[in-house]
Image (tube, rainbow, N blue to C red; front, side):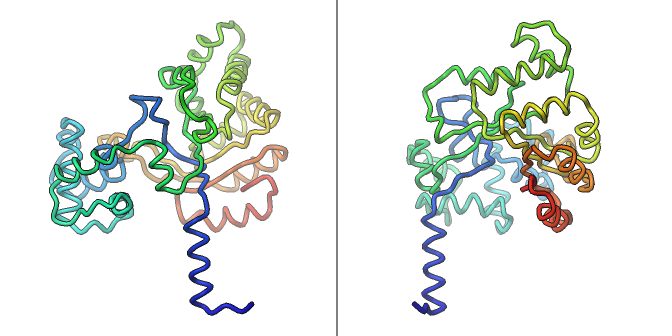
Length: 309
């Protein structure tokens, strides 16, 4: 059957809008995680992309901004980025898309009016996921943050919807502290490498992760390729059939005064990624680069390494 361009366009739009989404990388927790689960208009505005945009455009210091409570932070962001300026950034457009999806008309309304209207929606996890057309998602779970990891003792949430990952950045950022956490949790007195692997075993049984993940730059790659511990971790991931997700090109604290909003883009040598794929051909790697400059080379590498996606 031949279709007109308009019919084809309508069909494609219908398929895209009605296909359920499996979101494989989020920083979301179910509401059962309580203080670790952030939701609502205030948290929507106090997003680190919007904070960075505010601090580079408005006449306010990071010190002054972070001295405010969450409500006044959000109010300042709304007034400066959405009322005093045209909200054209991706982060701003995301907020407006959410309001539009919730049938909240934001034109000529004060921050307080929008806040009250948003809160009156009484949104549950189920309502939000249905509106977003998301069937399930993968959380970002840090097994070396014990306050967070202890939340797994609470079974009052749907693990088919909120699936898990293992964020292993602490093994790069602060290896000794991560090892101490693992030692305290496993209650065993072995060498460091065995302690980490034993702890990851216990975390696997508790969370059944979809993948393990790290953010890395060129210096981190050298460690991953040469450190005996990481060779053991990669072997463990292979045995568990868990991919390693790599977000490459992270530069922490480009502006440390911005806090979490101060991270930027760092150097990455994708030849090291190719070496990693060759050195561990049985492992699967899920990779994205922060810099658009690296995307073409990454795409080419994904056509040369069957274990790279």
